[in-house]
Amino acid sequence: MKISGRTQLYGVVGDPVSHSLSPLIHNRWLQEQAIDAVYVPLRLSSPKASDDLQALRRSGFMGLNVTLPHKLDAAQAASERTDLVERIGAANTLVGRDNGDWIAHNTDVEGLDRALGHLNIKAVNKKPIVVIGAGGAARAASVTLERLGAIIRLINRTPERAEEMAGDLGISPEIGGLSDLQAFSEDAALIVNSASFGHSGSIELQLSPGEGRLFFDMSYGPAAQNGLQIASNAGWRAHDGLPMLVYQAAASFRLWFNCEPDVEDALVRCRSAVSLGA
Image (spheres, rainbow, N blue to C red):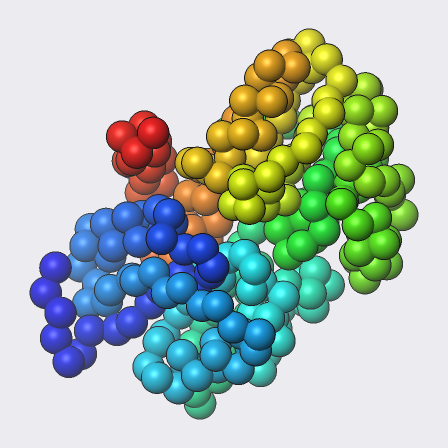
């Protein structure tokens, strides 16, 4: 990779972000497509992340992926938002405008939809699905599952925050705290964990016996391991969020460069990277 004064800047912003496989994904795609750009990780620990995201655009960044805990701030940092972002209130992809502003997109919805298809979860209509968390990722997951016709149950450490999220999204799920997870999961066809328990190092999940049902953690690598182990021990088929990561990345890449990257190769490379880092 050659970097010159004409090389365009892209990156992923989050806290933490050092674990991110997004640079591995995007820099290979940039090389394969012969695009003069570089993609870098940017740790942002700030109480005013929306201001900092705006500053990155003024500094020359042409596109950003945004991960926890800044997805809600990413929506606010943009001067233009898609209808999906307006509804969800969170963005994970920022596209640079010629006037120095951002357009906010959310590719998590497409990413989760395609990831569930990748795992052969094709029919959730009228089936109960548990979503753990109430942040930007949970908002995208809830909208995805609503579109698929699922009966959504929201679990969050602070149920009041889940109630606020449901109101913002215009949905009417059953809502509970972590102590309700076992009861909520008894007849659930699927559990989607969007919470960042693995990043904080603490996790308290009490699951009903899984009997081969699917537990999908939207995280991957070390951040997902505790939750995946608990789910596996309880008899759930536990899968991490690597497919979602790659599919949402591909959607972002299309928005930035209007071309289709090699998704299957990226999945293989990411799985290998996680295995080597284990």
